[in-house]
Image (tube, rainbow, N blue to C red; front, side, top):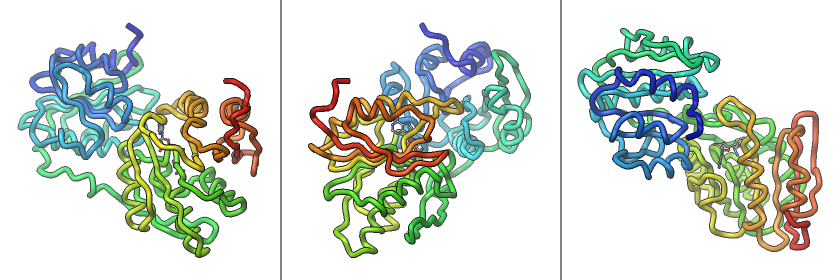
Length: 354
Ligand SMILES: C[S@@+](CC[C@H](N)C(=O)[O-])C[C@H]1O[C@@H](n2cnc3c(N)ncnc32)[C@H](O)[C@@H]1O
């Protein structure tokens, strides 16, 4: 079996501290669960992981913070893995308080380099007696009885709104803890939107791959509306539950058209599109990781209509140009600066074989 992440190994070293019904929030490797207990509840905001977790015998799997498998007072031990974003830790701890049966304990596990020591203050807000029960594998494990359980957990109460503006189009974007670029317009996304104003797209359905909070699809439709042009439906996919929730909310507030679905890569995309737009991911946790985007580039031509366009913004240092040429077709940089490049490629049947 491949090695488990350090945080998972650190938890397994402390099995004696888990009791009763176990819930696990935010693990990244499914082989942890059978090693923890014969049954339990696991919660992940990553759609691909959730799909794998539904196959673990005896365990219920919840996708994100609004899954119907979540219910009050159903767990005696709630394990919380430290997420990348501190704001998402607050969300996980609030969910933990709601899942907690009377007398339940919460266990926080995280890597030192991810700042677990600094997160303990947040833990103590729901479990004031928290003590460090182990320090192992570059991680710390903390545990305490959780305060009297929360009576309500409603993800919609965590949703925030912030205005963004680009090329004269202003609108509100929904936010939730852990979502990409919460509270501001990402500079790469802005460059992609400006390219859409400078070099309009051909007509036809559009897909926004890795849509986050739905900024690209909403902006495009409001821009077309402002020019009195026919409005293009923009479907969106994202792997993260919070992104799917927020993109649907952002679309709804702006009366934008398009279906938003959870998908790991292009797995749940059936149709073909005249245009695929993207500001794709290049991180896994805190590490740079371009593998998801490379996989997307290898597959995206299968979702473009003949002659369809892929338009993508990426950090200029990322090595995508050759991959795009090989798997999609002729490619050009529409705009580029030290930080970002907007690439445009036309689907071409005669592209070199990948
Ligand atoms: C750079 S952000 C862009 C978000 C949005 N398009 C914007 O411009 O504001 C990348 C997005 O990719 C999503 N993502 C990461 N891995 C993914 C995967 N395997 N499949 C689909 N989306 C993924 C993340 O959840 C994140 O929302």
